[in-house]
Length: 576
Image (cartoon, rainbow, N blue to C red; front, side, top):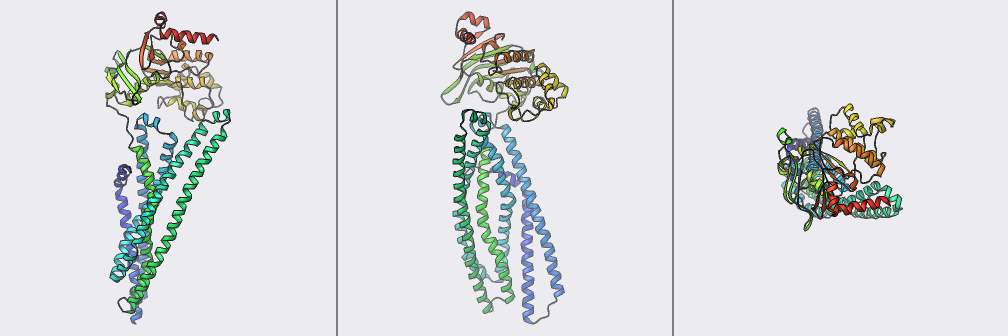
């Protein structure tokens, strides 16, 4: 079981509200007991022939009723405030954790599963705090208060009850284990359904193009059947628990009531005391039997806490304290890799002793075979992944010393897979520079050669782009990504195969926009098409995580090595 230290910490920090809730629950129980004592006393007085002052009795009873109602209302309010306070803090901590978690955690975990934990499991935890926990507190306090009253009435009565009820806790313990396992299984199966649904929605074009809708329908049906079967088992156990609970309540009730009548017949308990006992017994039984079954319900919430704590226990992205300053930005060497190694999996090296440097204002490109380590270089440059050996310096400062957010502020990235949020064009561009004015956004779009197209749209810059920019072409998305980079105005520009998925005509237009954003910046480009990097100051050819060749386009062609062979193949392909 995972340590619930974060959740427990949230509960403790708001413990004042929980204490208030408990005190008010105690007040409600005590008031109920005191009201019961008044009724018992009145009955005994009437039976003894003494005169009963009903005015005084009713006034006392009315006062207890009003005070009890107010206490019950305040108890409910305290419980709600406690649940809201704990849930709000816990949600905030989960959100903050997701932003700080290492990038590789997201690579290793399905996004649908993470969303299911953030939404579904946090919902279960909220339900536990709002309903189950207050019931448990009320039951615990009720058991104590009512036991004291019954013990005062007759110690033998209390002993009979305590002896006849332990069976409840034993049965509840068995049910908790069974239901907890089924609940964990249920949450895992909802993860699977969420994953299938996400794949179906995200890949709808592929599904329909290849006619494989039926495959996904069968997957979803299978997952749905398994989920229903699991819930049927859980429902059967829950229903059994309800029946068992009723049976357990009846037998001790009968035994206790018969024993109480016997005590009255012997004069050990007054008739008023018997009435009071019968009245309070139902409350005691509800609390006593309610507690273990509330524990069964609580097990559902604890399963969700376990799952969310897995997120909170994930490794965080390492970060130093260093930020960009005048001295840092004045460094001549902007990027320096010295014998850098990296592996995604043990014993499978991706980068091996990689050494290179990029001076201020220099334009360097990496080319090579797929899987050669080009994209990995960018992930390390941005601090998404940690090198396994060697040294990486950015503006002369070791990567370990950099605050990662401050480092990324110095970098603008244009990726081959442009991600657009389902909001307006203007908002998507402005994400690179929060607070940017409309004029700045428009100017960036003009430089990216996308302004004229935006103006043709009915709502212009306020046009919604749809999920992942569904209404835009690949070239239009790339231009918006370039506009974002221009607006950010960072000193370092990373271009991750920005034209690999575009046709030659579109590529030519994008290259003009890229040339605009490259001006005056230090640039590192990953290229699939060699035509996109011919003007680079230096081209490095990667093979098996090492630099095989390095030089200008002309120099590399003269060497008649790997680059020249790649260039020849590309030229032959273009002629076909």
